[in-house]
Image (cartoon, rainbow, N blue to C red; front, top):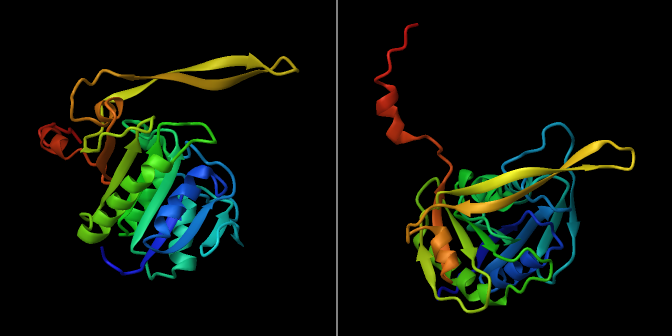
Length: 257
């Protein structure tokens, strides 16, 4: 293994005090110099939101020995932007890792995820980036079984690099017995959503988002299949959302303008 001390940016969306980011920091400290910029409160489901209508604050904190840490009042993407411009000052880190998220970010969840959006922002900045998530939403989730996989995946990325515009979405199934790593595609699955309507003490309605995750994708090469069968899923993700296969069809349309 290389003895190089890498410069590592750690971010998340569950907040700077989340156990998941603590576990990720512990792994990253084995690889190099760790800088953490994370939200000062939970920011799950923020997607790629950025703060433009109010000022951002970023304050240095001391939570873990030997780690430079900052809490940010903004979104996960704000955290990456501030880290690149104000902390690294353009001298970009060797890798950006986001998580470990409390809850999966497989399939369609990648679009909503603050964890993954932070990693996407890292990739936009041309930093090799990875998002990590575990199928356990509880605050006291056990991340120990994820650590050796996180370290190996990060070492492979640092050794081999990633193609421009590509990042990795890594999800861990529930349970301690993992069967290994599967390189996958994003499953064709979505949430069947509803809003639970309730009333406050003043008899005014309010709504709470609920839903059931449904997959009708039966392929054995998807992240849903891998996770359901005890594998760590690794999906290469890109932020170029162009449907390239549709361009030729659209060029056959007769626009009468």
